[in-house]
Structure formats: C-alpha cells, structure tokens
Length: 303
Image 1 (cartoon, rainbow, N blue to C red):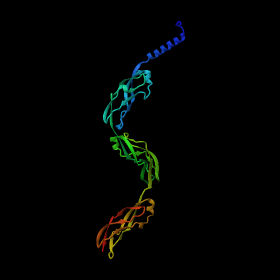
Image 2: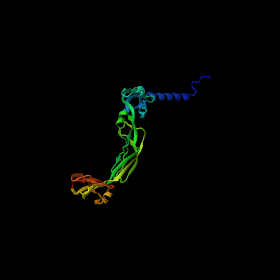
Image 3: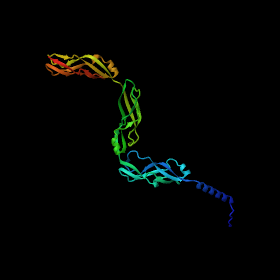
Image 4: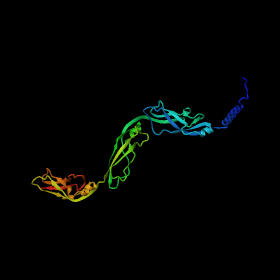
C-alpha cells in the first residue's frame, strides 16, 4: 500500500497543535522552591515502649516543583516518617532523611530543616487507680454534700512507667449539684489529667452524690448533772451542779428535742468517800449528737 503523507491531514495538524500547546504550557512553568511545615509520623513503635512527653508534631522542609503544583498542595500530602524499629529505652536520636518523606509525584524534597529528632522512650506500664468524681456547684442553702460514690470505683491506666507511677487517681466530668436538695445521679466520662497517661479503654461511670440537710447546732443551758452508781450509805455533791450542752443534728430532730431528753451524768461506781474530778457523760440520743459539754469535768465530793 502506498504511503500518502497527506492522508488524515486534519488529525495530524490537530495532534501537532495540541503537543505544541502542551509543551508551551510546561515550558512556561517556573520550577520553584518553597518551605512548608509537614506532619511528623512515627512508625513501628516497639511493643511495651512509650514516647515520653509531647513529641514534635511537625517539621519544616523545602520542596521543589512547578509553581502551579506547589500551590495546589493539600495538608497531609507531604508527611515526614520516622521508623522506630529497634528503638530502646532512654533518650534517643532518630535520623530524618529526605527519602523518608512522602510527597506526591512531581514534588521533590530539596532539604530537611533538621537531620535528627530527639525522643525519650520508656517502658509501658499499667496500673489500677480509684475514680474520684468531680462536682460542679453547691447544694441549695441549708444542704450539704454527703457520700460520693462511683460505679465502677476504679479504672486501669496506661502510659510511660514514670508517669503512671505519679497518677494517684482518675477523675470525671463534673457532676452538677448546683441548688440540689436530694441525691444526684449522673453518668459521666472518666479521664486522667496527665496527657501522657491514658485509660486502658474508654470508660463511663455512674456517680451518686448524696445531698443531705445541713446539720444545725443548739445550746441547752443549765442542764443538771446527775450521778449514777453511788454506793449505799453515802451522799454525793456535784460542783457545778449544771452544765451547758451543745447538740448537733438535722434540723427537724434538733427542733423537736425536749430540753430534758439529754441527761448528763457522772459515774460513781466503785468510789468511796473523797473528792474527785470526773468526766461528764451523756447517753446517746437518736439522730442527735453532743458536740460540747461545758464544763467537761465536774468536782464530786462523796461522804
């Protein structure tokens, strides 16, 4: 078949025109260098080892390529990678080479701002610590916080050995008790304050905060001091003959308590004639406690 140089002439002309246009477009692009900050990625961290503290999260590199291509770079397209295979405990230096930086096709890594990255590595540790719930606000006037409990009561934490040893407790999101007049129940997230330490697994806790009426005090003056167990045939005289009592408890029982319901006394069991300084005692009363007895001792003369 004879060759016809002008066969499909239109297609040939179009191809040459497109190729020329493409060449002119590429030839017109300037190759430039630009400094960019790229994320730092750690790979192959050995089992049972932890990076201590806050490692560097990014490094500066200089990249080379066409101006148009560099202007279209998206965050995360270039990543610096450090391989921790074979790393040991202690302060270590790891090389950061240009060939370990991932970049899209057509972008060249011209320079890395730092040749090494310093890391502190420690053995990983695990420990069980108590959960201490946090609260927010105060109960209503006249009420106080009672017992605070958490279910579960403990949680396991992980992290570098030296930091785990310093963690005494885990905490929770604050449980709001502002203006509460009764028990507060809430389900909250558990966490630790040290960012180097983490929970073995995500945990939520059910927290119960008891809110009770605040205890009140009441004074009872001139309460006679009686004696008990005086041996037969003897007489006793108490000085002073009366004391002042301060009682403490919930508002309702304190208000309803009769003045003669609390009986101070001295025990004379086994004592013969003589003069004694004896401690004043009070029998227990339901829902009420005795804070102070003034005076706490009295003089007893037995004849």
